[in-house]
Image (tube, rainbow, N blue to C red; front, top):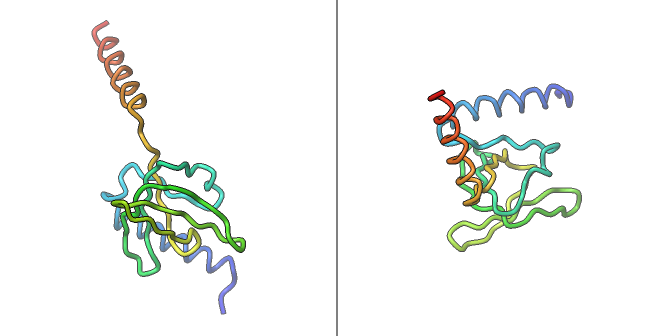
Length: 118
């Protein structure tokens, strides 16, 4: 039997290997740990790795809730809603970029180009 610390270390190694394996598909997505759950906002994009180590393109986060001390995420994908367990999957999150966010990025990049001419 292994200790809790050994199990947690094995899980971290497993997650690191999976992140490397799916590096391209997870570009710009952030790994969400239990302590980071407050970062998850409705409208953000979720990808997750299930217990079979398969990457799933989850969809848009609709809701998060706790039931019997376990966190669940409700996702929407092509008008299909479903729930996944936070504890049984490795969760990756990409914040929803609004039109204002995109315009801000364009404005900042144009300022940087303008400053390059000085």
